[in-house]
Length: 203
Ligand code: CO
Image 1 (cartoon, rainbow, N blue to C red):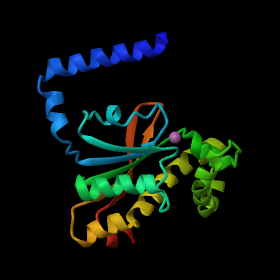
Image 2 (cartoon, rainbow, N blue to C red):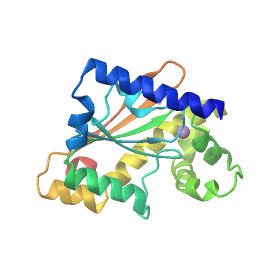
Image 3 (spheres, rainbow, N blue to C red):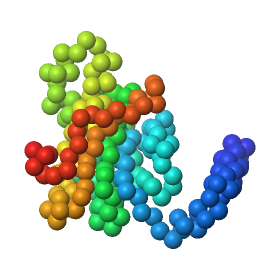
Image 4 (cartoon, rainbow, N blue to C red):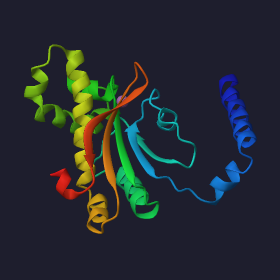
């Protein structure tokens, strides 16, 4: 109980501080949200989306799941993308992975963790697709880091192939897909050299 009370106390202090800085802050947010960015990231507690990029409530629409996977059969993720693109009209979607991702490591090793194994199957497919590149790396740590990066690139591609994103591009809506990776060890984001603004670029 004590710990949960702590959370509620933290919340009151946070809300008071936000109101002190900007008395209209919550009233304005209550009226509407108009984020420019959709963040698709890992559920990992060490990768808090808003904090990393210094954005306030109302500025970042967020979807997180284990190992930042974008699946064409995942109604949850697709619904978030559809609402963000069609209704909120976000201009950028950032798929952000992170080094040291436990989900990616489990997929790399083929570990049996339970139900989540099924969720991680698509990352095993990524591993198989790039098996030769991964095998050429010196050790498991290097393979793990690289698979974290490759997973982001694959998920950006998956995102670009969704009907939601393709329809947005077809009607000339400005929408850019980005692939980034976050390093838990230094708190820094790195671009992965993928930035897609049209179906042509995706190819
Ligand atoms: Co992770």
